[in-house]
Length: 311
Image (cartoon, rainbow, N blue to C red; front, side, top):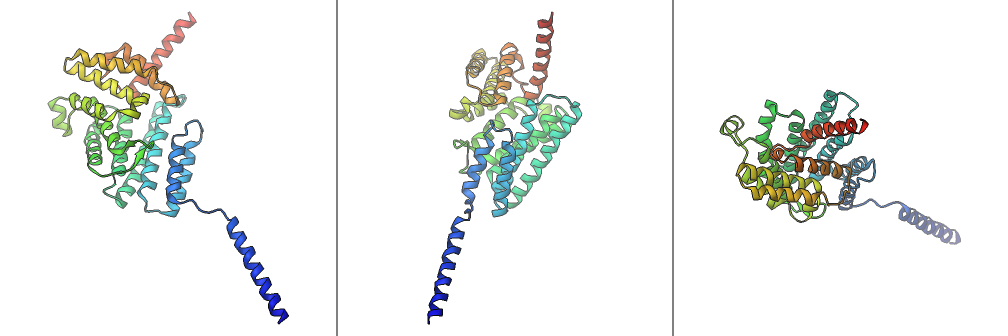
């Protein structure tokens, strides 16, 4: 009997120790907490490897739930942000290599979005990012024929995005439909509004629609972001020039002056502010404003400044 009691005591003690060991094991974060963590890392631009941290978190999410659409469209979004980081690099390599790297990111973006749409054809964020993948390619291709074909695909994806339900909030405040509306506004500003372009591409620009969509989409939080305020300003200037409405041009110029007063939270904000200054000096470029084109203007301006200061 004594031996039985002793054995029972050891068994209970052993189970108790096992229980303590289990309690000491780190508990897995729920998927919702991992999504919040990925969103925090995405905007932690002050951390040099923040996009790597996002992808590590997405790996954890995918292991837990490989069929979760977020795990795929959010990875496509990382490809977009990696492409955006190219604007901050010193271009020591050839432009061809630079463009190949950006197009490789666009291909990865498409791959992730295709998987997302395979899993969830009615997911608004999947369609939003699919349109962005096309935009990544077009921004690198420039005015080539394949860019014309992709314009319609972009518009169809963003139009679909707006029609689909979504409760996801980017930065905790911006809706997916709101972002799609802003992107359509940029697209319709950049596209020619001539009949021949519409005949060839099956879609054509509309400066008035672009202006209306930007006014509806760029509000509240997005009015405090230099990148979206700059796009809204360029659209107002463009619409004013196309419709011969000087008050709209002045509206756009006023937005640029407001944007220059905004604090710079990220390195890209400084680039956008530099572009604001150039557009203030050359407002006729409102309809054609793109970071890629202004990047070239900025480089030339910087060269001119260096040459003049060395004399």
